[in-house]
Image (cartoon, rainbow, N blue to C red; front, side, top):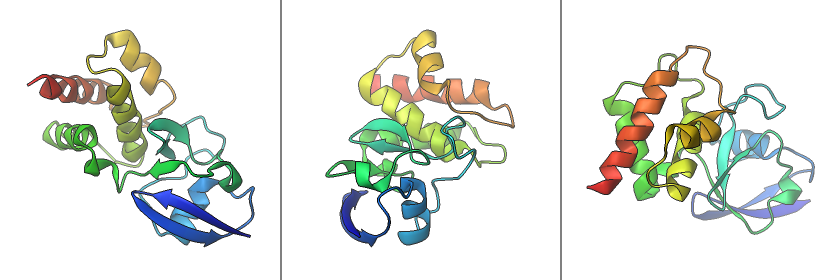
Length: 154
């Protein structure tokens, strides 16, 4: 079956089964490989994308559920002012170690700052709780989120 989806501001027609996870549509059909496969059950956050601005796990989202929603991936997050700010702070603070989970981390952090301009520790903890980093970059991630929030106040 054919589905028309909007990804990073462009409309794409993809052929696939309705129960195909969005992750595989992005990676295998659209060649957007920044969204990573981690656990396949929505627990690690490596596959996080935005659906109408909300952070969702693309490994658990069936293609048929996307509908007319706007999807943003790590490849497109820099088009927004907040996403660009988060990416800049990630680089400036040298957040990633191996980098595998960082796309999902940035997507969750950006979704947080889109809804909470000045997050407190509890806000950051709640927003980032579902994103695992095997390298343990959590303190650098928190610092980058704070710096991105502070940069938005200027």
